[in-house]
Length: 100
Image (cartoon, rainbow, N blue to C red):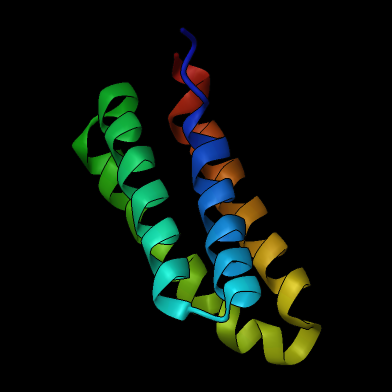
């Protein structure tokens, strides 16, 4: 069975975490989705690109989550989430996924 690329997992975790929190009105549930996807992506990053790259991409994932909040005040919630998810997805592809 083929693995889902880490870029898709990470971007999907950011979008899915926000969507879960928004539509269920349960922010902790969104956090569970965000954390689970982040853990899966981090494991894949470690396997594909090593610990340092995985740490850098994990930091980008967390920074994307945190950065989407102030960005949302300027551009709106969904554009902010899609923007940071795209950025994390591109970074993941360039630093880890295309190596496989």
